[in-house]
Image (cartoon, rainbow, N blue to C red):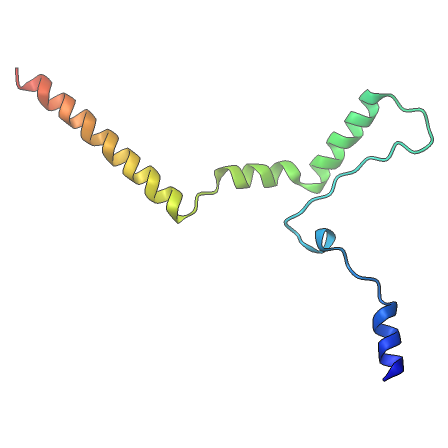
Length: 93
């Protein structure tokens, strides 16, 4: 029983951020070397691209859940009704 407790406490806990595939970590460490800001920015951008942050942002930006789909359908329907009413009023004269 004591051996089981020792092995469970010896195991390092896994970070939730690292374990969850929805989170992306991009970090650039300049270290001790003298690096200008442009080089660090270039490294960071390449790291962000490599990890896949931009693709995830695009995917989330275009994602519509069921409520959003209903809202946009209602908006299209209202707009269609207004346009139809306008066209009918022109033809009435």
